[in-house]
Length: 360
Ligand code: V47
Ligand code: SF4
Image (cartoon, rainbow, N blue to C red; front, side, top):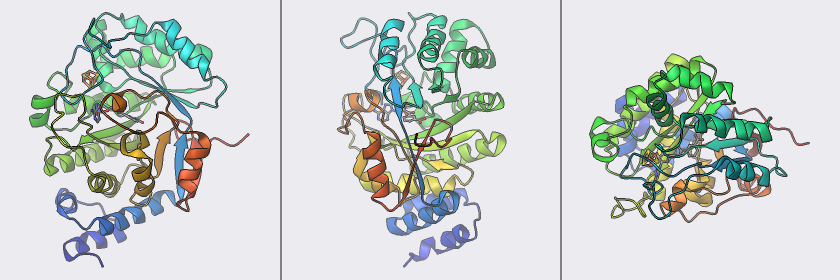
C-alpha cells in the first residue's frame, strides 16, 4: 500500500510526469521507503529495463596536496605534511602499466589543487595514460580542477578544456558539486567554485562533446530542502545541455575529517537518496550506486531502488578509504557480474561513455 501522502506522486510517476520541488520534499520527508523505492524502480525499468552497468576501471589520484581545506575531506594534505604525496609521471606510468593485463576501459583521474605542480603536469598525466593505453576512456578532473587550472594558467575555462581534450580527455567525473547551497558552501567548502560556475563548466564541456557526471554530497549539515534544490538545479542544467551521463549520490564519510563527530549516513538514507534522485532526475539516463561509498550490500539493494550502475573494479581508492570506508579496494569482473545477476538483473559491462563492452 502506497501511503496517502505519496499517492499523488505515484500517479505522476505512473503517467511519466515531471515531479515538482514540493514533490521532492514530500519524498524526503516520507518514511515510506518501500513505496519510494517501488516508484523509483518503475522509472528505472522504464529507462533501463533490467540492464545494469559496471565498468572495469582504474582510479588514479596524482596528488593529495591541496590548497583548499574542505571540512568534509579526509583526503587532502598540505605540502610537507605527513602522508602528503605527489606522483611523478613515472609513477603514473607504472600504475597504468601494472594493470595492462586487465581489460580496463575507463581511467578515472582526480586529485588535489597542488600549487607546486605546473599546468603542464595536469596535461602530462593524461598524455602519459594515453601513451600507454591509447584505447582507454579518460574520465578526468572535476569542474573544481578545471577552474583551478584556468586560474593557474590565465586561460579561460573553455581553453583549458580544449587543452585537455587535445591530450585525451573524453569525460569528466561528477565530483566537486557537493551540495548546491551558498549556506553550506560558506561553512564547509568556502574556497570552491560556486554552483553556478560548476554548472557553467559542465555546460562548456558538453558543448565540446565531453560527457560528464554529477554528484551530490549528503549526510552532513545540509537540509532536505537543499538536497531537493540541488536535484532541481541539475535537472534544469540537463534540460539545457543534455550532456550528463549519470548521477551519483555520495554519502558523507566523517572519519578523519574536521566533522568526524557527525554520524555516518544510514542505509535508509542511502537508499532514499538513490530512489529520490531517480524520481527527480527524469532527464538523467543513469543513477549510480557507487559500491565503494555505500558498500556492496547496500549497492545491491539500491539496484531495486532506482540505481542501474554500480561503478567499477576501482583498485586503490583513496577519497573514501581515507574517510573511513571499510569497503574492499577492488572487485573483479566476476564479482560485479555476480552481484548484479543475483538480483535477477542483466549485467552489462560498459566503458565511461556507456558503450557496451562485448565479451571477446
Ligand atoms: O567531490 C570527498 C566527495 C567527491 C568525502 O563521476 C566525500 O563516476 C564522502 O565525485 N565523504 C569525489 N564524500 C568522488 C566523486 C566520484 C566518485 C565515484 C565516481 C564518480 C563518477 C565520481 O567525493 C568529492 C566529494 O563530494 N567526498 N570527501 C567524504 N569524506
Ligand atoms: Fe581539496 Fe577536493 Fe579535498 Fe576540497 S575536497 S580539500 S578541493 S581535495
